[in-house]
Length: 427
Image 1: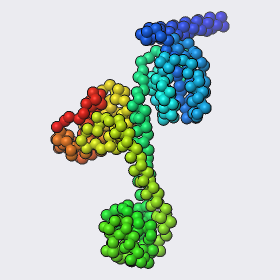
Image 2 (image 1 turned 60 degrees about the horizontal axis):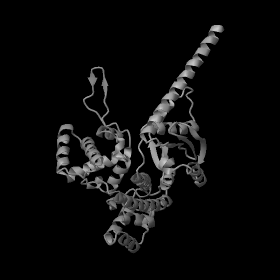
Image 3 (image 1 turned 45 degrees about the vertical axis):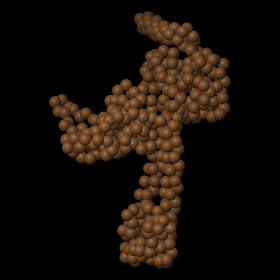
Image 4 (image 1 turned 60 degrees about the vertical axis):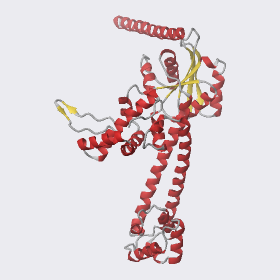
């Protein structure tokens, strides 16, 4: 028992010494940072972001806690509480750090930047690495906020630039647009399935069942049974108005003929589903137009060199620019390619190495979609990329596989353009 007790006491002494040694290192690093800042004490505000409640901690660059971690509700009262806690310090000495983990902190970032505070977005991997120095291996929101303070005092970070607030807004709009488009696709698929039951021959009368003329006809006569009974003059008028004169009596007669030949007799009546689905599709498509108009406004304000790439329109350019964010996050083109999921998967075991590889499809799927889409357009509009596409297609084969290679080349070009702020100049 004496031996065990002695060993336990020795371990406690060693741990105590290690803690003191680690704290000395943090203090030394903080002292050096303060020295290079001209001896002025920096005020570090570390915030752990949450959905309903954030946690904030205030310390100086020597890791002296000025205000213990406290709750900041994600509302006006909580923001005012945070502002009251930090406004006593000169703004030029205050830096606020948040982990870039989700969109829940975006309103707080806008609030702080609007009040003139410097904000740093921090990679959570970096703060978690500091947290592993905690011997107890404890983790909670309060400890995380102190960890952000420690990071601000001892590590290098990058301050959020004014244009990045617009970039965050642009990214949110682009992702919302994508969500709306997915909803439209789902509703259109449902509408097609309803037609397969109520009027399977309907699509023979239109190049697309999702055109304005087709929708107008379905809103009046959603099934084959109702189309059979349609007044030819009224149906012609509906088609003529919806298509702005392109469709009329002839198309109405085709629909009447198809309805009489339909195999949908005795099938379930899908009138209500069809007549409720079409307005939903129309509403969402109108919302998409509104979002795209706002995207265009912000994109033009940013005046990025991305707009000089031939074949890249406003929407594709906005998606690419907003998903990339600050190009300084990437030290080389390979990192950006990997972030877009355009990097190849390497399959190797022993002496075997796969001859063919496919893209990893990790990272931002929206960025990857925009780059592949832009790759096809630039292959049509630019001679350099057209030749590259033809060379890769002859060697690799397959249109979509080739586009993956073109998208990789385009990503490297975009990286250099953004890094050096130069316009597209390939012939």
